[in-house]
Image 1: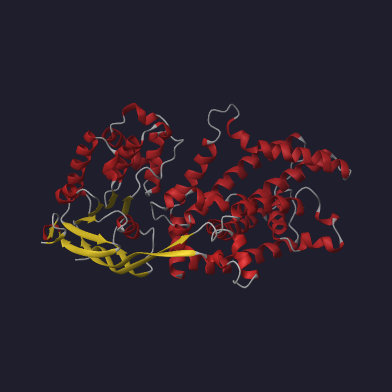
Image 2 (image 1 turned 45 degrees about the vertical axis):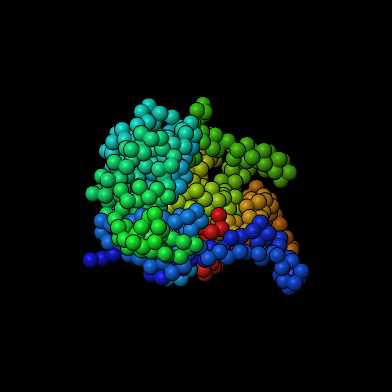
Length: 249
Length: 260
């Protein structure tokens, strides 16, 4: 059986460029004074964001990633999505990744909801005809009603996330990555989204969910990855982890 | 490293239906709710070329009917390579939100920018032909325009992709490069004739890649074959661009997401 997602001893060092390092004047000055005077000109800070990440997911697996703020959940999702390439190790994916890492991004604020659906669909490689066939289903699920004809800039963040969520889950349920998307919707939509997640488990080939909600992780996922300070504390079946003791059961 | 660049290029090309559509919609969306619609795209071009044709025609004692098609064609064709200096530096910066969320190929953003430039180019060409018909100066374009446009789009891609990368890493270039395009506009025979400079000044023609890439499109547009020097300059620029792009894009592609 082929692995849907496989990470082999992945390490990611994240360079952070200061204002000075992004200024060409400081870099040039560094050259001209032989790097003695303005040593700050090249101050790029390197952060070890992830180290020693090893796991694999098979077809049908639902993986939950939990950890404190800053433990590397979003960074790991971005490595899986292919946005960041690992500094060391390998990240292999077999399938189409549909990432919903920051739900409100990637929308064009001046276009209407309907036009944004077309743009998002085309960016995912679908033809306009295929998108139009699913259009009504997307609009119905998003419950935006006639708001769909208004420019996105009039939407609240919750409305925008409804739209992106229904586009991603309707058009492209192959391998889905979610990052804390539940926080923006209202209670009714969260219920509906949870139900959609259960439905997606059947339709998508795999699902990765970064979350703080232990209930959601236990309700939806069968595997668990615990991150602590960028390294992997636990990977395995979700039943093998004691959420109260924060230790393997 | 190299294979990832080639893969990026292939994936970027395969999204052609997306960037062509997006480019057209982005350009036309800007002119929504205006009376003249997308004709506004050519507004600035018409205004500049008319003003330059009146002044330069007066200085050089050339009839306006001869001067206007020349300056207009010059401005339209200069805008193609102008992409590298004006729009390319913004390409990755503007798409920062998408780049941080989706692993689309980086070449996609360059292709989209180039398509946008060509959408504007086509609008301008229509206005150009309307103008020459009014002035009774219509000529059939020389066949060289076809290879010239292919060569220019290739050069736009390789140098534009590098300009986008450089501007994402060094933020000064976002402001420096558009500024450079103004200087180069005046230093290139856009609205004056290449033959009118001599002595040391002839280097701004013979060593100016922007002249080469401008002239191989403009001369055929005005019905003539482009001079050999223009083809030489263009081919060298493309060759150097491919070599540098292969090196820099392969080395830095993985870092772009951290730069923006």
